[in-house]
Every structure is written in structure tokens, then in C-alpha cells.
Image 1: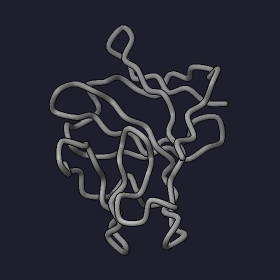
Image 2: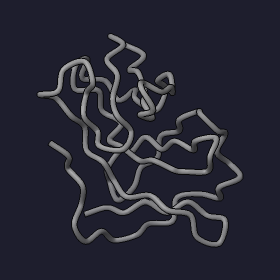
Image 3: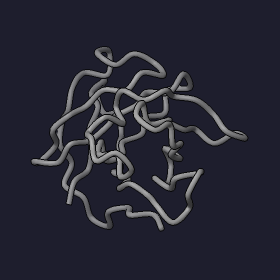
Image 4: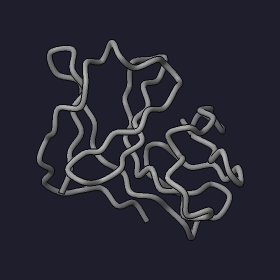
Length: 114
């Protein structure tokens, strides 16, 4: 189940130039820990930073990859893999993390929060 927000409030996070492709970064957005990822193709993704399996806020430090064309991040703790587009765990589809809309405007990353 994807937890995409219907009408987000956009929050300016940082200049896009501060992000490295295929590396995550944690940001506190409106009191919510968000893991943000810039992909090599310029697409940005934002998911909840909290790993539901370990209970730690570590997804931003996970290994970014691809599983069958799906952009993913693997938790650095127990290695479960999450779809960056939907938040669904590919190893256990009954588990997911929140997905937040992310966009780039005027060379700055913006994330939508509830």
C-alpha cells in the first residue's frame, strides 16, 4: 500500500547541487525524518527514513540500486529492499514506508509534507 500524500505543503530542503547521485541524505521536513535520493537520471525520490524492520532511522544511508528496472534502496541494517517510487518493501510486500512527493524548482529540492 502506497502512502502518497494527497495535498502536500511544499518545503524547501536544499540546493540540488548538495545531493550526490545515487546517495541518500536525511532531512527533517516539517518534523518528519525523510530520506531523499537523487538518481543518475535526475529524478528525485523521498521516503520515510525510518526502517520498519530495525526501528532505526537509517534508510537514507542505504544502498541505492535497481531491481528489474525499479529504483530501490536496501536498508543498511537487515538489507530489506524498498521501492523508491512506492515505498513498498520488495522482500515483504506487506510492509511499506511513507512516500513523499519530491520536486526540483529553481535548482532547489522541495519535498511535500502533510
